[in-house]
Amino acid sequence: MILPIVGYGHPTLKKKAKPITPDYPELEELLENMFETMYNALGVGLAAPQVNLPIRIFVVDGSELEGDGEDMTGFKKVFINPEKIEETGPEWTFEEGCLSIPDIRENVRRPGDIRLRYFDENFHEITEEFGGMKARIIQHEYDHLEGVLFTDHISQLRRSMLKGRLSKISKGDISVDYPMKFPHKK
Ligand code: NI
Image (cartoon, rainbow, N blue to C red; front, side, top):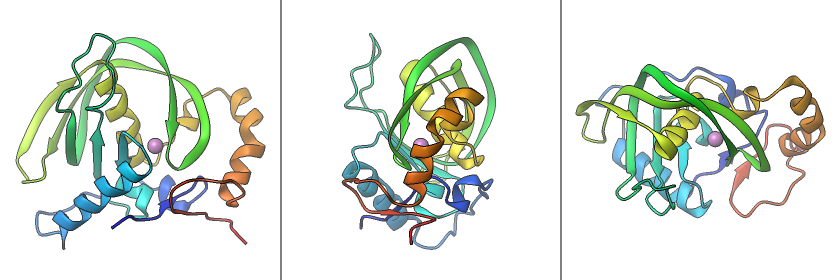
């Protein structure tokens, strides 16, 4: 089932998401729905707060991306209750977008690598380090669980330049090819 994605300005996007327990109701179905929602919107990552659930889950599938000399094969994953251990490596800039902020892309600087502890879809605990594009996708989605959007990483000046467009998104005054819920739609 395709779930509506909440747009910029929605309160759930600003909340710190809560961990879940293995008995979380219909977890398997939720994960399926999150993948379906992400594929339908042509995204490579989707976090639960984006479908209005303030819980610590995100899914990624970057397996179709052309990594810059990087093997993206099999990079389809579920992250449950992830906790960041550390971010290391030189910072690099990449133009990020977000399914909750359609049509806006901005350069964001982040460290090259991230190490985190998480549970997979079978609630097996894993500690793993990611670099390159994989790290970038994970860092962006992890931020969603902390109530942080990529627009929080850009300069004050850039943000004020985007203010009008962001306000339009929150009012649903945009055309988008996937179901969305807008916080200030009249
Ligand atoms: Ni996003």
